[in-house]
Length: 125
Image 1 (cartoon, rainbow, N blue to C red):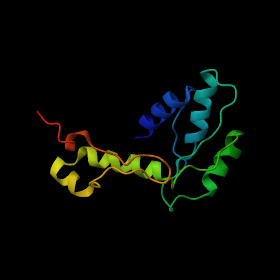
Image 2 (cartoon, rainbow, N blue to C red):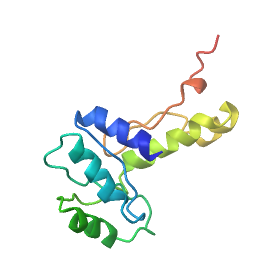
Image 3 (cartoon, rainbow, N blue to C red):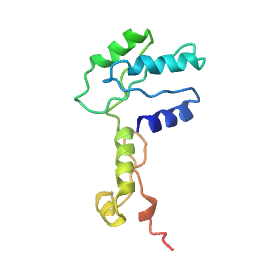
């Protein structure tokens, strides 16, 4: 999952991205080394932390260890929850997914539309 996340983020930002695990010693330092060896002159950390179980000090420690600036962790944003939900809905049988999805697509307060699985749109042949 972390490789896919890094790939999608790199495509969105048009900059090199290497994913690393905050809770694996040396993982972030290895990712920064990989970026530097690929020519990145100013690597930065943008942690994605989804659960409350993540130690908030891990991000600060990784920034200190690598000497890179670090952003505040991304996490409990509605768009992140919708992305995760759409991933689960995509692998469920259509009948089950339909019972878990809102009947009418709606827009959240952030302006992001609720995920809709194309298999349940009624456009079946």
